[in-house]
Length: 376
Image (cartoon, rainbow, N blue to C red; front, top):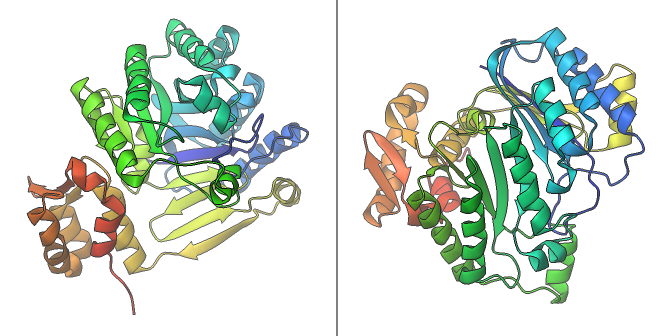
């Protein structure tokens, strides 16, 4: 198995909370698409497995590209890789970019999964976040996709928004459930450095909910979605049975992937690689046949810690048989360090797997770090 991630670094406008790499200028879009296609050729030997199981267009806002540009990238990939008819090809999209004509063309080109950045169904929250769409456009976008036969549809919603309450958050959850989509990703609003949100929070112009309120919203989300029949298969992800995101699941299961485009990351079990996060420098370097990337070898401790962190986030949990096969020297320490979390009912030991309970998911990062191997 292997996957490809393509970073499309363009957005209509900057969301106040976002610190991903993007530009609001589309002036060099043609050059960027050309560069990404050339990088496909330059990176053709990164993956030893040439049979892809997933392709993921992320960003940024990939839906800003013309369908002909998406197809151009897919065609170049097809010259270097092979894939079966059941490959998952995902495109992230904003509601305001979705039209019946565009979805029809995307489906014809091979895109079979959409991830729509709705974030909220409350217009005041969208406005405060500087989103380019409103709630009516979100509802219409989902309907267009469903009418067009997209049978693998995901939406994103955010909890812990400024001024949000359990009641307003329940409204968002209920609207998401009414849409009957296959997959829901939900993240807590995070104050990232160098964002407008961070600036306003520091000035006192925006007040965020207390941590206790945010935790209540998360537990509310888990209860509502699992009661409605969604599997909570990863900390931030819920899906109907058999509708898990294959691409993201591969990340959590340590499947190698290649990242293309500025700021994109790539992974092999023994090293990581990441591209420069500057559009102009990326295009210029690729035009000269040089991949503008850095690489870091992953040590034994890095591999162990990543295994613990990623597996603990999922419903599958830490498989003790796999742990023993790959990191047998760490097994006793894991048992020792996790014991207190089993006693406090933050972790369950079942079927020879360690799994987080709902309240354990609130402490996922802390529990993982307590199990980490620290090299002297």
